[in-house]
Length: 446
Image (cartoon, rainbow, N blue to C red):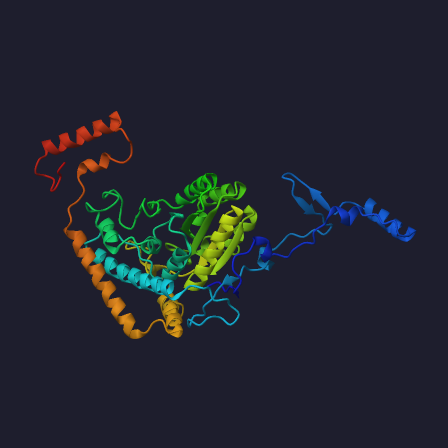
């Protein structure tokens, strides 16, 4: 695994990570003094000297050098990882503890436990044949809840499939999660999406898409619309390190930077794009190091540190709103489970690696220790919470299984205000087929 330096500094412009060049001003090269001939001659020499900077396309001043040097990326500074809590849950000595508040902190922890319980039960339900597919968030709960707590409920969210915690924070209930995974009549998507592809118009959470990276340019469009409308909100876009290798990533960041769009890009770097390690995905210093090329603010955060995620997200959101500019955040985390129920992680990583991360860097355990140290939580309360959340998830799953499926006619809804002729014809053909084959399809009602 890559070793990265830790830092307690939060969001900063990308230039802060590199060596700053002295700024050359007009007065530096052309100032003339009238005090004495020696000063005058020196000033004249300065005036007649070759320019120290050039102005090229785009109006950017660039310093000249007579030293030929091909830069070696391995010798450039490595972006530090912003962290507030150490692995034992204690606040780092040089860190500024964010003013989270007891109520917010306990809600974050409660949702992390709820997400863990939902993942465990839904995963096992899939193995039992009760759900067709599932994706867990194991090991990435702090990344989701820390960020969600720092966002405004009206910020438009574009996510991948491993950010249900953001939707959960916005009070999308466990029953709604179960209804979507079971594709029943209460599913907001009317059963037309595969499990874990959640969405809620009311909660400003765009429906998840299966193809990688599609949501990244969409988030830029939404952020630009928010900017033009003058609303005090941003677009926030979550994606994995694998999606950052897609062309949509580069097109979206270039557009966001050049048009000054208030959008927060959050790359969830958990080390693997399904079975592909980051060592085989890219060269260079991760994802955050790409920000300088786009002229974009950026920060790298410990994604397993709930306090760091809260502080960094809050500051990044402030930059997006105050400067109307994008921010790229790379959240360093680790996926403890399989990529999905269709994956087997033992084929591309060792059990010792997973055990080491689970034992030493578990985000829920770290945040529990922090709360316990503050006197806000204890083991007795924890047992009650965990028992309650598991029972509520089991009840939601059983309730969802008893609900009817959406009608076939709903397949033709919600795309066009007026159903066009070609869809009307398809609907007619479907029902004609069902009529000819009556009794062969269970529950194929209108």
